[in-house]
Length: 317
Image 1 (cartoon, rainbow, N blue to C red):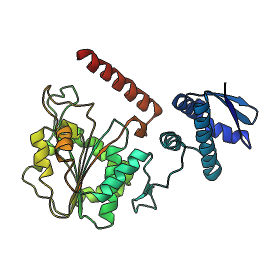
Image 2: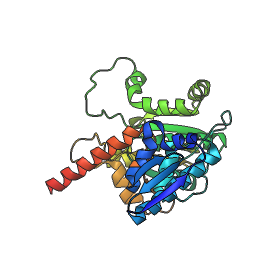
Image 3: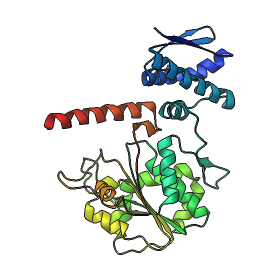
Image 4: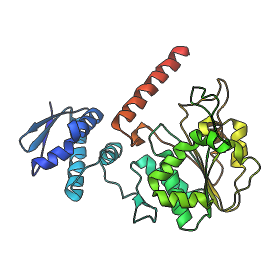
């Protein structure tokens, strides 16, 4: 069986390469299909010829990252695995102008998504939970606001319950819709500090509204984000998209595997991506399990659910 050896200067680099509880090692081993054995300060790779060559490329690239940065993150492991072990140019940072904070795309798919937003006035993005759809859209909106490309940000979400009926909710209309809009506020609070979020909301520079409140409005010089777009009907999506005014930008995100609409109702996100995707100035982006940047288990769980859904679909045919 073909074998190759990669030396490391010290065990600290090997520990970083393997990751906590050998997490990174398992990802590389499972992705490339190789066996890995540690002997002293060397890593020995076993597999067929093609697998060994691929393993060498991946481990050398990861070793270079460790030598340059003194650390290794899961997003970098995923990038190397998805890019075939080849270094890519550093993705464009999203400058938040907030205590020198910047947000970086964590995968090639995320980088394509950010570039699509920056280069188009209407972007549809579909992808699984945890792949940064909403987070990157909000970060890009903050960047556009602080560069004075827009004067306002509007964050929108349909008030659709995820498979359970919440019943009567106390309080005024804003208290009633707050649970539905909370994920958008969470993303905002994760990107900006509390005082900045409070100031923007109080001055109506950032507005978080349920989809039903968008009817009849025209939004000029506004960055508009519709989250959970898969839970809109075709009519609702048309209503929302036509709110777009002069010098405005719209990003629609959603996960088409988590549709909470009644059965046999066509969701507005899928319909719009198919219907409008060829229009000049419109971009469609599809993120995958490889773009998930939450806990490693999220990626594994999404993959298992997707595989089961695919098997169920085949059995029904």
